[in-house]
Image (tube, rainbow, N blue to C red; front, side, top):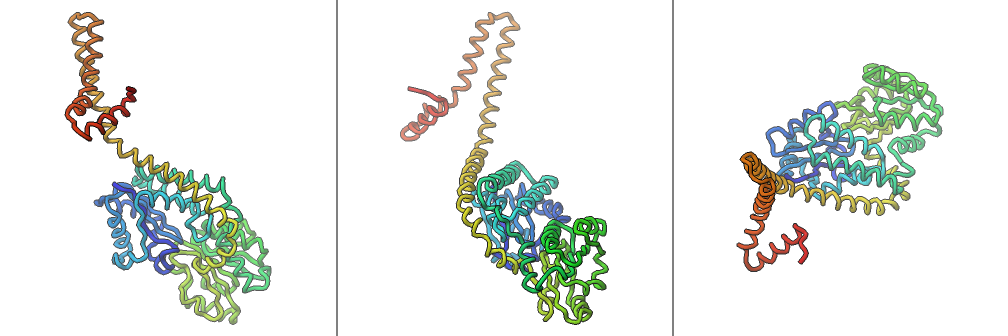
Amino acid sequence: MTLFALGLNHQTAPLPIRERVVIHVERMRDALAELTRGRRVTEAAILSTCNRTELYVAADQPKIAAHWLAEYHRLKPDELSPYLYTLPSEGAVRHAFRVASGLDSMVLGEPQILGQMKEAARTAESAGTLGTLLSKLFQKSFAVAKDVRTNTEVGAASVSMAAAAVKLAARIFASLHEQKLLFIGAGEMIELCATHFAAQNPARVTVANRSIERGEALAHRFSGHAIELKSLAENLHEYDIVVSCTASSLPILGLGMVERALRARRRRPIFMVDLAVPRDIEPEVGELDDVFLYTVDDLAGIVSGNLDQRRAAVEQAEAIIETQVGQFMHWLAAREAVPAIRLLRESAEQARRHEVERALKMLSRGDDPQQVLEALSQGLTNKLMHAPTRALNEASGDERGALTELVTRLFHLKP
């Protein structure tokens, strides 16, 4: 079995493709079970965010997981293959370390991805698909990420999607003090956006969420109020700024709903940010004259202009990662010797038990204990030395020289 990382991200696939292969949290355990059932995949973990869907697997061939990913989303393999990257062994380890450290993110150094990787590992563990190899990989990834954030400036002066959204809104409205804000969803990203927007002292903050209790809990933090998702159609026209990020597999805001809201607003513009993947807002909404709609990909250009400080630290972070990759690969190589070590110990244990049983029989019939100990030690020595001695005697030429050097190293022999 070989370690592989394969998937697609914001660098290899556009948003319309990424949203087609999202695996939602509530379906993750079933997906993991399906991936490892009846296939040559012994371990698996899935990381699925708005910017990436990646499979970390221990398998014979990466194409097994790639075909599963296409089948799971009812896609033909050739529809997905142009956007997929496949990284075996060392490449997979390096990629996992870079992802956890925020070096592979749309926003360089962003911290959310580390929490998402930890959740992916917990889910795989609870599903029973996280074995020794992937468990070690993820734990090492988290340690590397901590090292990078502690010893470099990669995570300093964080520029988030939320901050970029506020910056974009400031281009549309002269001031946010008079604007009414609507947040759809109550997850981590919405909480982050609400924090940034609330700092601008908007006129009103409203949270729309499927769970009204969770929506109220978030709205209370910003002196706002909550509404249910089903009341969006009758309330949408009241808001100047709409930020949406839910786990819905279907759009929350359709073209017709937004058109009706614009008519009620008498064509006053609406600024919309869709941070969800799959998208919460139908793409056609962005074609309306009085709507300014931005997706996660649109925000990438905004955040990229403020990353000089962190880019300067990337070289240092990459050096840390390379060192840790080397250490992990050494551990991985050592694992390959585990079966041989186990067999060697079992053979030695069998020889020990045999000689102890023989010694006990000698003692039971009244033999001299000193002679019994002598026979025990001689018998054990002969058994343990038989295989290497025979191999050296039967070898010839270059093979004998190589075996002699190996035995000398194994037993720490000094001429």
